[in-house]
Image 1 (cartoon, rainbow, N blue to C red):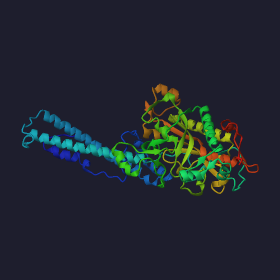
Image 2: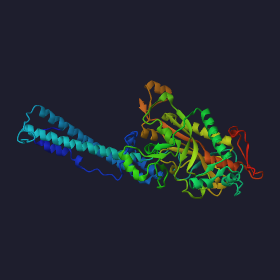
Image 3: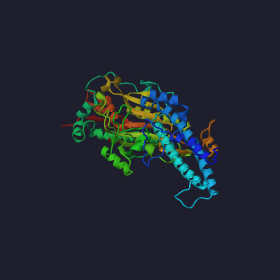
Image 4: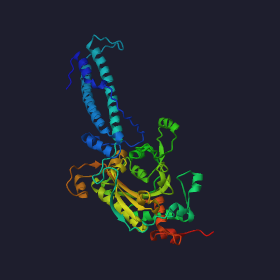
Length: 510
């Protein structure tokens, strides 16, 4: 308790506000969130209690620029607590002065204050306290913003299932290999696609540049057939359909763990606003927009600032969308053809779930992926991806790679065609997506077994997974389905219904 006794108040005030006069500086720039953006609710307490764990996570995942963030959060939080304690003392002093003022005569000849009277001294003291308290409030806000900026930049923690380092772990295979021993240079989807007049990279180079393409004839039919096939399998497993937009606010993408540039500084996204317009856009209150790199971002943002009902979880959606990646041409020889392009169609699965059910939902997503690829007859391997491949949001990630005969000199022929990730509450905390758990008894009924705590609301986990990455799957189907002797590509049986009964792709007659 702070006491006030005449002139000693000045000494108490100086003592109370000493920390308020300090300058809090941070090397991390404060992130300016647009006014319409969801307000994140980050678990900074967990960071403060586990700074070494978060630092090691940054090192394991190549987020070395962020490895000192946890310790800086610890220090700034101590400063904030100290400042808040002193702010409470200031409020007590203000209350004491208000009480004294209520019973003390105040001279009427204001603004000319007679400092010889007790009332005048009290009035001056009240004004000084108000000014000092306002400064403290500003510094408190500054500290909170800096702590939030540091926490926002941290990646999610890493699952114990995840290999540390750069090497994935093989978990299993799908389908037997039939073409692994065929290194023919002609078994390349770009060559096959041109021969059968279903791919045209040259015309796209004229209209749009390198990294773009036309799908023609059976190639365009294959795209639509693959979309319908993937949707039908996912819907059979309980996913509901949604078609997302192609553009997204940059702050929504950022909240999902997607930044305009990756850790190596490589451009990832197509930003709609021109650089020279950014300042004026911010002044006008218009957030920056980008072309979505994946429907995951839109699906996650679909429930921003929303409270879900626990009884409705898991909530599972699937949808086809166009995706845009700016980095397509930056990775060398493996970027030829359809393997890495700037724009493509992808069928994405997404789910919100209770924390205790996230593994079951993740496993169910993998079942969908395996069923789709198994039905297409592609030889694939399943990988537990290493820590350096997790990105910002995932705690665990499993990729499925198909075998491409044309890539046998690159990664032994393997190339990623699907991916599935558990993101825990990384995205929902940043998007302010909550789940209402209901009464304690109802929660126990929905989630049997002992619980450490029972809360009325929480942040759900998010799970995402690729159902179908169209260009790469087309490439794999062309290379693995090509009968070089008779010069045709076999259409998988599961696609023939959507290919109007066509069972083979052949050269066009001239």
